[in-house]
Image (cartoon, rainbow, N blue to C red; front, side):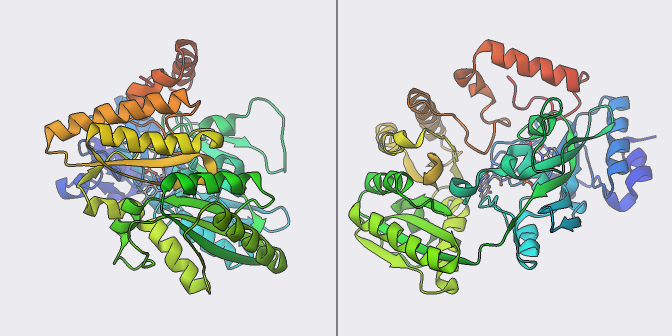
Length: 454
Ligand SMILES: Cc1cc2nc3c(=O)[nH]c(=O)nc-3n(C[C@H](O)[C@H](O)[C@H](O)COP(=O)(O)OP(=O)(O)OC[C@H]3O[C@@H](n4cnc5c(N)ncnc54)[C@H](O)[C@@H]3O)c2cc1C
């Protein structure tokens, strides 16, 4: 029996893709190109996932779990022959427990659809990656996605109560608790968070919720110098108000977004975009404090969003940055280096210096409140000299980040792209311990082989 026929017996013919045109769509994530998979399976139930894993084990076929493929480091990109397990059809919200502020979801639920479904019920799911319109909750868990609201609410890991995981031998486990806390045994749910499909297939999540904040306001500060925006961000973090979001956008990044439906912003200025959320009176007071801090730290202009439509335009500009940069140059490095917030300004200044010395165009944006700067070195992959300059500049950036006490990825993960650099940040004992964990959970190296660990 061929692999495709065996899979069709499990998921039905409509759940198996073998045509070259269909497979081509799975050859990359949002940035890293690889090879098309041998076959794609689209399960709709946990039992189907278990059976597919068992087929892969019997055939020694590598299996790559995939959510929406919005990743930027090649985690879902096949580097060699493999089956891609596309979880996007497992997209049901199974239950909402209002009393305990929990929801049970399948892994393929789209993040933004889930957020909206919760908000329609007066509830709130805080993790908010800028890719929320297409990324999946399973993919967010597998990468420990951060996002726009992490400065106040934390990252995906902070909102996962429990996970359903199909192990590399096809067994199903549930790791975690439905209580507000839990201390029995090792924190295995946390082990699978951020494991990038290398330790198990996440099929379901129990996520934590909050009541929806009653009010939200948005304010934008514009600066002539980017480091000023960094200083203002630091002043805000030291101040009495924790913003619900605090995003940095440099002038190059903003310029790329103009004319794409977002806010029209003056050229040459850098921005810090902030939200405050909570009770209406408190939000009104908080947004005034945030605006005053922006002014006190050199903002040339401060704009309050007059209504939700204007706030949406500001945020649409922010969300469109990643894609807009492809209109400047065909490829971008998309690094998400993260430093202790007190070193943010040094990082911003260092990036400008490194790009200038390497003679590479760069655009910076990102989660200023987390010390997480998305550094985009913009280049043409067909220009070998430019590619070499970008690689050198990236490595210079990594050295700077580590010297500032930072980490080479705050949220995108390792995948293929950062794999050569894990050993720059972590010592041999730590890497060996991770290899031993991988071998213990996946002795045949079936799950996403060749990713994360060098
Ligand atoms: C425009 C844009 C904006 C972005 N903004 C942010 C941001 O603000 N914050 C942020 O953190 N990231 C951001 N990202 C990166 C990306 O969206 C996140 O990493 C996201 O969590 C990936 O989800 P996905 O469903 O697309 O997963 P995929 O890209 O399909 O997969 C990512 C990794 O997770 C694994 N995986 C996926 N689903 C499962 C599963 N069910 N079980 C086990 N493993 C699985 C894959 O094997 C792969 O290694 C952005 C990307 C883009 C294109």
